[in-house]
Amino acid sequence: MVEVEQILPRLRSGRIAAERLLKGDEPAVFAPRNAAQVLLPLGLMAGSRALADTHYMLCVGGGRAGLYYSAVFPVTEDTKSDATAKAFRAFVSSKYKKMISAECHRNATEAIADADKKIRENSDQKSRFPSKLIETGWTGK
Image (cartoon, rainbow, N blue to C red; front, side, top):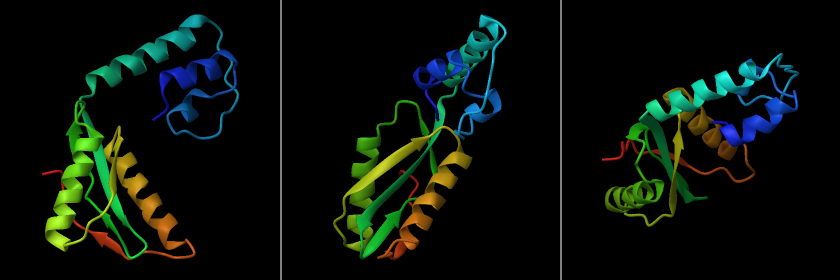
């Protein structure tokens, strides 16, 4: 998700369209008529973000021999990616008898997390040396 700190300079310079803002697409022209057109949406976005206490996480780890993917699962705002990655590594080690390095990525919505997972899997499969994809079904517990 685009951070407010990244958005504000682009909005001030008139180089971004509001509807493209949330998609993360290339910026289009946006010419605010007054400060409220810029500050009100930013305030609403910041407020809604603070209220959203559920995010979605995806963990992945392994290497060329195999990439282990968790399911996309809900997490709270205070869930630490490092601690979750450690738990995912322990799960893979226990179930598959493989020692892996892993990382977990937090996303604002389940749809974005699903898309993130699909992009990572497709990118690997289109690479010169695709890995075996292993869906673990792990949900953070």
